[in-house]
Image (cartoon, rainbow, N blue to C red; front, side, top):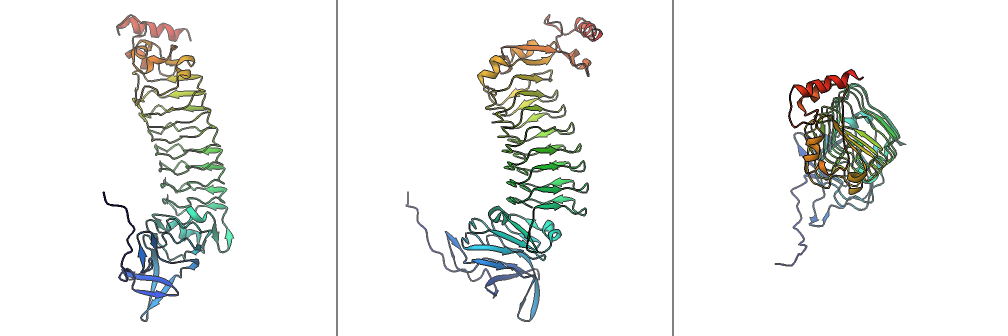
Amino acid sequence: MLPATVMARTPDYDNYEFIVDDIFYKIVNDTAVVTFQGFYSSSFFGGYGGDVIIPTTVTHEGKTYPVAMIDDNTFIRCYNLTSITIPESIIKIGHDAFYNCIGLTRVNITDLEAWFKINMESNPLVYAQHLYLNGTKVTEIIIPEFITRIRNFAFEGCIDLTSVTIPNTVTSIGHYAFRNCTGLTSIVIPNSVTDIGMMVFEGCTGLTSVTLGNSVTAINSYAFSHCAGLTSIEIPETVTTIGANVFMGCTGLTSIVIPDLVTEIGNGAFGNCTGLTSLTIGKSVTSIGTNAFNNTSLIETVTCKATTPPSWGNMDMFTTNVFNHAPLHVPVGCERAYKADTNWGQFSTIIGDIDNDNPLEYLKCDVNGDGEVNIADVNKVIDTILKY
């Protein structure tokens, strides 16, 4: 095996076409694109530093161009970059444009509505953490009603953000949109939103209150992971998908109810929710991913409404303490199926409970425990209902 080496590369003077005020540009589709400086090596790109102010337009050879994009890798590893001013003309920030800009302390903008329109593949706020609008630090945001989608990375890392108002015009919230906004304390997702992207609120440790609208159908991977301040959340009945690690590390959660339309619970969905004491799994769940409830030893009761025991990703889904001490409540007549299941059968106590809201659901079970599903089970259900 050859030893690893760092080879200096030949300066790439073809990447840019001209320089104005120490900013490198190239022309794409009759617009100016800010790009990285010509000389680079495998471990260092460019030499931008200090306070960089990107203009709205730039003139080259007698022609004026709008500055519309920040290219991929433009400021990558520019450790001495301290602030960046992004004009309202920018419509795209490329991949890894500010990667590892560890000296960045502020992002300056002049138009908040223009910021919402930027197609972001990365966000300088991840490092800067502070957003300034015309010189004033942004702490509260009212999203304009013309916005229908909050774009990926929109405010990722903005630690000063304490309040966000989302209008009913918004239908989806993109990946990473509010990730690590540690100052955010509450969020209301309106009824217009149907999709919540990956890692949207991951690491929002100050978040204590979340209201999800009644149109949400999918909560994607890591959406609320490591929101340690979150003590409760009501998952809407409209939700059909709970992705991997959605609530992982939400140590403040004490009770979870999985709605009846959910068919699959993703890997690690509620892993390390160490404060969880009560769990209800909806009737449509057919599979539960690996480590979905890992390290939740304080659970005192588990209810699974599915008539057929859902499959598990691994046998040690719950700790031994939960298996030994927490009763498992299942549909009446389905106790035998759960006891016979390799995974669910680990519960020491399995109790059959009737679902008074939908008693006919249990006609598919061996209600009276005689080993057969027949008219005797129907009579048993009727007798049980009459008692109520």
